[in-house]
Length: 374
Image (cartoon, rainbow, N blue to C red; front, top):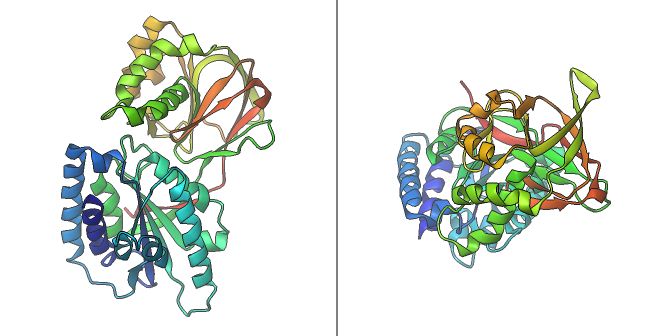
């Protein structure tokens, strides 16, 4: 029922949106029914109110005759009737990516058909960062001539929603009812020295160390624990991390406009986070990158000091502490002597010493997202 309520209101919005009004408009909703925005009652009530409000606003605009769901949605969602509304619920890990592959084939066929007006395609991700990660990972590898006819909107229906287009559903929906432009966004890519291990992509923040450990353990345990366990697990992880992983020195080489040959650092890093840009959050709105700088290294510290500084990441005040090192970089190479976890928008991988040197770098702008026209 919740998915149908969601889809009906998105239908009203998409059939009235001014986005790309001069072209046939196709949309698809890829929704994770297990995401917190659907399963946590208080969150769903808040989201439902926003969806209803924007559906009512949409009906004050002109109705579009050229707006219909993608055929992929109708075909793939025919078993539960949600497909006629443009929504496909994900049913297993990796399903969002497989759906995206199918709809890209549909778009390629339609765009090459010779029709006088090319359709414009909108992918609506309704889930958490994992759903968005799967969709964008496939989309960024599509041919440019296909990708330029797409946009992605990431509706914050998950628990953390750090990679969404807004903190609240209303902010994301607003992009569909007010003048918006399509702007390609960069991704962050991790490559390793081991053939076949990677590359790995993130579209918000890619990081190594303590926070990747938090992500790894939360993913293992969240299916067995109720509610938002992440905040509690952050405290537990601060106590356990050093007992399970050796925090050793990292040899780091930083490349940016002012250091084209690379600046060499050696840091015993508790964590290192690299964002697709500055002004990024993770861990359910922790402001790890609170300003224009896109890299943050947090040096190893005592347990007492960790507990003292932990709260500062919520406001971004950690940047003023000596344990924090922030800068801009397009590429960061690093190596260490011990295994270390990495996480990409909530998905984790263990890096072994043979995987070094590893490289974290920004890609070219590849993901078409909506930006409000001021």
